[in-house]
Each structure stands twice: as C-alpha cells, then as structure tokens.
Amino acid sequence: MGIGKTVKSIWCFYRDGFKNMTWGRPLWGLIILKLVILFLVLRALFFKPVLSGMDEEQRSEYVGSQLSNFQTNNNNK
Image 1 (cartoon, one colour):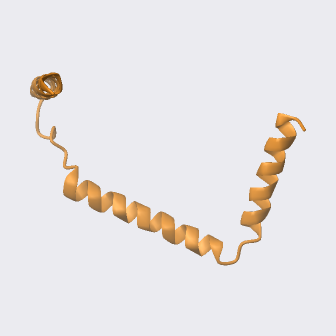
Image 2 (tube, helix red, strand yellow):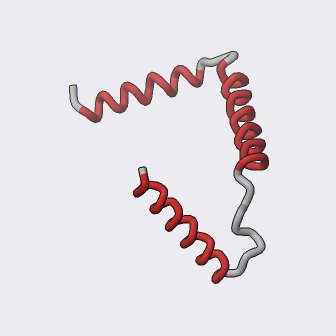
C-alpha cells in the first residue's frame, strides 16, 4: 500500500467520522471555546505586555539587559 493511499484512507476515515458525529461537534465547539477563554485569561493575568509604552531605544535596551541577565544566570549554574 503506497503513501498516497494511506494518506487518503486516513483522510476519509476522519472526514466520514466528523460528518457522522452527533454530539461531537458541540463538544469540539465547547473545547475550542474553553481554550480561547483560558488563553485570554492567562494572557491578561500573567503575560502583560512589558514593552508597551516604550519607544524603540528603550525596548532595545530592556531586551538587551534581559538577555544579558539571562546569559549571566545560565553561566553561573
């Protein structure tokens, strides 16, 4: 059995499976909705934009200092 036939049979398997789902579609929608909400909440709480409000020179200085601190900390271990 060739690669093309294998890929085609896998594609048909998933296509037919998703086509015949009854409860699967709402569950996948719920999973995607939960992931989006989780991503937005985590981003809002933990991943605040540190570089906002800085001009290009300040950004480059901040990133350079963070990289040099990271490199120094890794070399000390």
